[in-house]
Image (tube, rainbow, N blue to C red):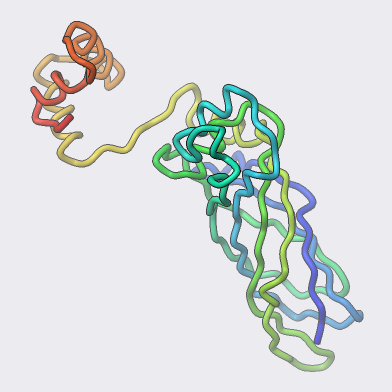
Length: 227
């Protein structure tokens, strides 16, 4: 059986992708000099938050994910990031291949919230591999990629920010239920507001003038949105 090993030797953002996309450069090695005719590879990417340190500002922004810093010893668990696949062309001994990883800027997704909380340094990723290899001299032998194959990737926070900034320069977005969007659209139309930014600012200004601990409850409820 041909022994396969994997390493991540680089990571970059794809500036030409339709949406935010990271490209991991994988180095794949096969033992024994036997030909690998093709490799159908699957990769699960997992964030390992316990493998780096965090500043005070980062800790505050990560409290939604892991709770107060005093509890991190028991709450700093791995986060699922992505699951992708790629077909690797035939090679002997060693090859390198790009692994595209589509990303999201949806702040309701734990991985996006984690990356957005980091100020600098690197985000620790663990790559877990599986799949099917087609090997053998003068013919095909089908063998699975062992489930214990893995590799470490250190994603520079700078690369993540450049990728998001390329697709969402100077802005962000939030996901709302359809009923809330309909109510916001009705509010915007009724008040002849020129943009969504102006709509949100009008609601925030109204909330600042309203008493009570939940400032958005009054204007949102007035438009049929549950606070």
